[in-house]
Length: 112
Length: 111
Image (tube, rainbow over all chains, first blue to last red; front, side, top):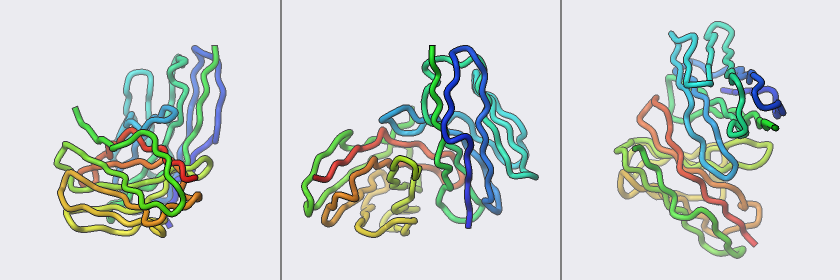
C-alpha cells in the first residue's frame, strides 16, 4: 500500500531559527512530491512540487529536497517567522491512478 | 488566479439531515476530489472524479455520495448525516499528475 510518513508530528521553534521537516514515502511508481502549507481553518496551499529528476527546489525561505533513491524528502524553513506557524503536509503522487497520497502533516509552532 | 470555491465555510446540521457540500473550480481541471480532515488522521479521500459523470470511491466512501454533472462542479452528499461525520471537508481539483489546488474548507458540525 502506498504510504507517506512525516516527522516530527509537531515542532515548536523560536522565531528566527531554522527547522527541517521530514517525509518518507513508499509510493510507487513515483510521479511527483509536493509540500503544502495549511493554516488553521484553511485549505492547503502548495509550496513546492518536485519530480523524479529534481533534487532541490526553493520557494523563498522554504527549500525542499528529494532523494528518489531512498524515497525521502525534507522541507527546510530558514529564519522562521510567526506566520510560518501552520501544518505542513507532504503529498506524493504515483504514475498510475488519480488519488494523492497524503502524510498526516507536521504541526509547526513558531514562538516569539 | 486559480480558484476552488466551497459553498460554505461553516455548517451546522442535525442528525439524519441530507447535506450538500458544493465545490466549484474555474481552471477547467479534469480531476476533482473530496477529502475529510480529522485531527491525528490527516486528509482522507472520500471520492474523486476524473471526468463529468465519472466517480471513483476513495478510502472512506461509506455514508457519502457525489455528483459531477458539469466539469466545474463537484458535489458531496451526506445522505443522512451522523455525528461521526463532523469534520473539516476539503475539495480539490487538478490536472492529471499536476499539483492539486484546494478550496478553503467547510467545517461541518452534525448535532
